[in-house]
Length: 272
Image 1 (cartoon, helix red, strand yellow):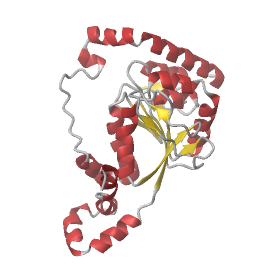
Image 2 (image 1 turned 60 degrees about the horizontal axis):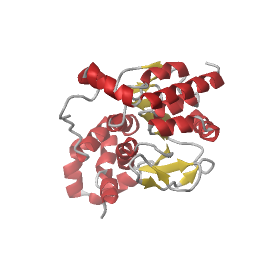
Image 3 (image 1 turned 135 degrees about the horizontal axis):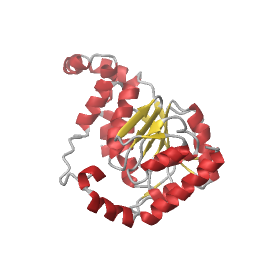
Image 4 (image 1 turned 135 degrees about the vertical axis):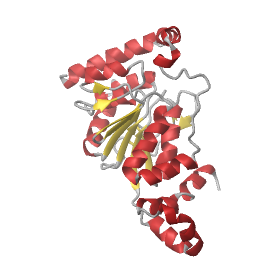
């Protein structure tokens, strides 16, 4: 059994009972009636996840959330413009499972990971923007991590919503009609957005709570041993201080400028 099989199979009977409000009886139920547990798992609805993938996206933006999506018993559709493997920031490629026109029309979750250079290119790609606008109009939840929220905004999906993004472009959300929040995860009705990169796990546990209930999300957190203890306490500008923050801003200045240009263009197109 590989790791995907392990994470997909082990928690499901437990999760089904958690959703039913019987998490306290897991041990007794497993001992006395394994068939009943399997039946409960089989009755859990299969969730449809449409996951946009694009060149230069950040792999970590996707890896954490997709692990939790898998635990949620999700059918994961990795959507790209064509069937060619999509190269990520670390050089590892992801094979699409659907093209923009082949992605299911009705999704439980539309999810967009980030990666600033790739995000900017996608914001300027009308086919991708149109796809997001179409699927986002019907999706049960419209979601993102990191700079993926800029792409949602460019598709007109965050106008009138509170949202977050990576700290160095978060203020640009206001140009797209959103209310930018300096929070790790922001929930506004059916919009759920996560801050930069590592916030993907925080985001996905919150989404699990929304879709499968608090007991299931708590179980997933334990299964994945999510117990972060940052070694340097420098994960946001307030903790890192101005000197280190300015180093990052200087290093990322060209990409941030390109993002602002793309956001401004999108805002004009959306008449915001």
